[in-house]
Amino acid sequence: MQLSARELAHFLDGTVEGDPDIKVSRPSKIEEGGTGTISFLGNPKYEEYAYTTTASILLVSRSFEARQPVSATLIRVDDVYGAIAKLLEKFGSNNHEPPVISQQAFIHDSATVSDNVSIGPFTVVDAGAQIGQGCRIKAQVFIGKGVKLGNNVTLYPGVRVLDNCEVGNNCIIHANVVIGSDGFGFAPQPDGTYRKIAHVGRVVIEDDVEIGANTAIDRATMGATYIRKGAKLDNLIQVGHNVEIGENTVIAAQAGIAGSTRIGKSCRIGGQVGFVGHIEVADGTQIQAQSGVASAIEKPNQALFGSPAIDYKNYIRSYAVFKKLPELYRRISGLERQINQQQDAPDQGQSI
Image (tube, rainbow, N blue to C red; front, side, top):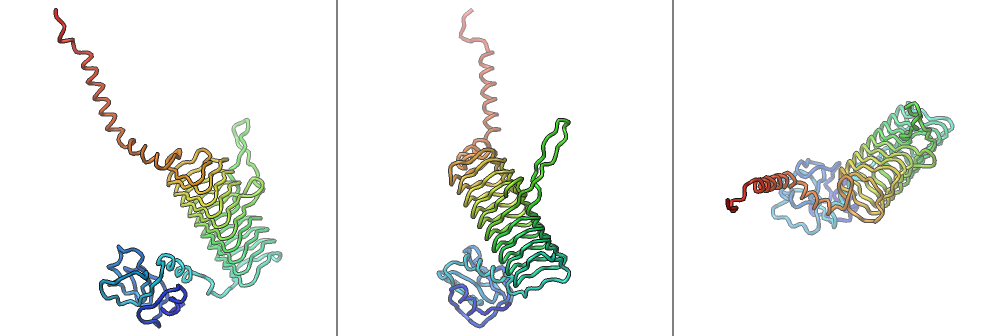
């Protein structure tokens, strides 16, 4: 795909300075550049590269004032980062690829495949599955019995959507995600063994959700595990059975959420955060990486840190003291020795 500076400026609501007919086919980092690429200057720390970059087009803010000559054609926009996000989405889109269903894919006779769908080789679409319009299903994907995919869903290689689960419109699910695996449910027996608890529920993923590679989302014991509209999950996240993740909540890599926990809307969860089961987390909660949440969070819009997680500012103040504990311990030990020495010494003022 090649686009001219004129076309890109129109797409990004920007203005061109330089050759409007110059064309680019891919984005590049400003320090690497390359003929036929478009780069951007969003951080003033990288301004020196604006004068040396070999990119053909450079995206800059409207307020940028060059202190040296710039060889690249400039496109000035109001919001550089917003424009580059829009630009990368366009270059990364699969919509320009013609829809092809591989002859090496298996599609059950009772499955329904809508128009403009691509299905890669060695993909399985099982009985009763429904595939919405414009879906892009890569190689080696498994779509189980009764699964429903909305419109414009992208499933990357190795994704498994197991029986009766549901994925909404415009979702992106990255490689090797498992949706609908059994939850970690076992009943202890008198003889010390464990009996597996059957999980007969499903997973429901609403519209505009993105799920990172190697994440696992367990089906509910009964009912459904819910990932609500607009949620964004990073790589390597474990979502337990009957969990609910609220709208527009974002969760970074390696977080783990135990069963039946409900996380509210617009929360921001750092990497490696752990949640115990059967608690509720209020809307707007922000949790720092590597924290542990061991009880319900009832007040919305709090920032938390630590394990167990406490108020973020309190944690920072407490940690400042914690770092000084070895020094404080030495000082206290020294004071104790001085006191003991004074107590053991004879009274020099006593007459005989």
